[in-house]
Length: 270
Image (cartoon, rainbow, N blue to C red; front, side):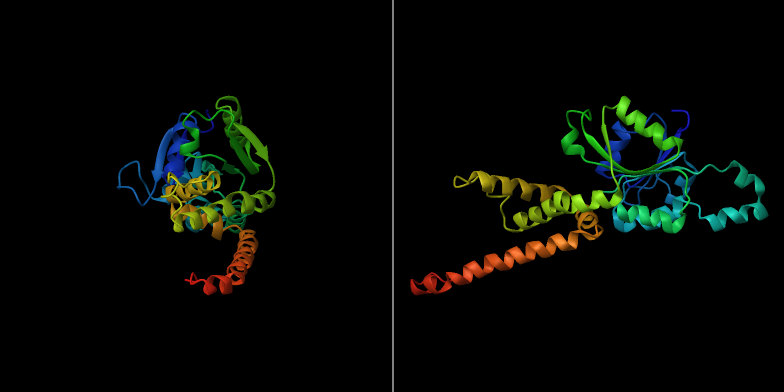
């Protein structure tokens, strides 16, 4: 892909590694991840701004700092004529590929830095390393915003070379639906894990429903705290879903209280 010869990857966890292996065209790769040992291929985020494209697979809480490093603000660009005109003449804005699990927050962060930034691809691959062992074909990528020829080139590559299904929607539509589909699932997984259902998955007393809950517990154990925080804390629609769960728990607690007197009458009230 001639327009993308160098790619910077900010955050080289499981998703960054997956995208490097399967979803990026042949190109020179630079990595910026403070959690990895320093090397000539692991650089500061600001160095990624000179790449043709920058893939962001960092937690949402780190997104703003990284974007401020890789997007040159308009005020800085406007001053280049005074400092060195050749710098501005030779500069090409990188394609920002945001693969965060929430979409409204990254879009707003980019807008606060440069509302007219020309090269953008806000997307959410609905898969991860565990679900792509048999390949990417048929898997879905949600796209909430695309701007520029480089974004179109990447999407064509994903569709035609990798067999991915591209589904377009607004960032708000994505976050509203993911507040239920993804965030509630992660919250239930956390509750199931804290209840110890993962360890009871293979119990002789396990039922079909408890096995499903056990799978959710194992999901919670498998993902990082940073991913949970991104999905729950940075989606503005999740709080409403949490309140619904809290209300359901209060209703269940009232059922426990309802049977309290009967349990106490036979000495079973704990």
